[in-house]
Image (tube, rainbow over all chains, first blue to last red; front, side):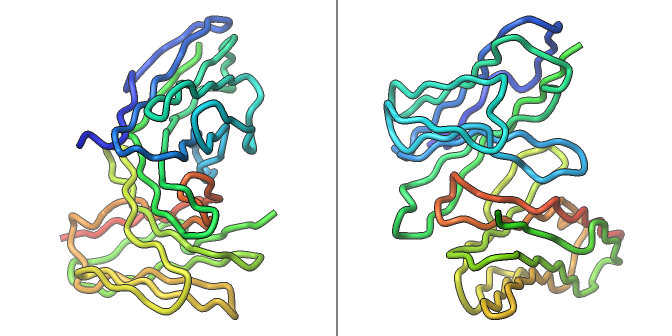
Length: 115
Length: 108
């Protein structure tokens, strides 16, 4: 199993450009999330999904869009990139955790620089 | 909002030393996660615990629900243990609240 796969690993964007960060998992996990990691701060939740067709906002959703058309894929779209979105982005997946604590599986991260 | 705080922020040790990293949280939780992030950037889950203690190899994680505190211990530390160790809380592995992380450097 590949686990959680993120692409690309590195990206440089100009201010105002749009792009999509890809995330795919092959573990049939219903829950998927996007986090961003910035220096001096813990990872923060951007958006999450509890299943195909269901998404919701996390702590820092502004400037990002998500959709979940399949269980496997959860892309993150930057609509109009800003320097404040320079960060390392992580995708994570897990089994449902409503009643049972579940372990998280992370992708390798995407390092995004907006100039 | 549940806050998660870790200490210390940075830790340097000599090979073979016993290491402790602490994590405190502000409200009752269902699960506390310990994660490891290597210099390459990838994050892996080490432990998920809601009570007591768990052990895996040289790593031991404990949690005290009454005191809202968890610790990660590394026995007989090795340079390959050098990484950022992160604690996080959350029931679902995909909706976690994270501490800032502890940068551990183990010198030979």
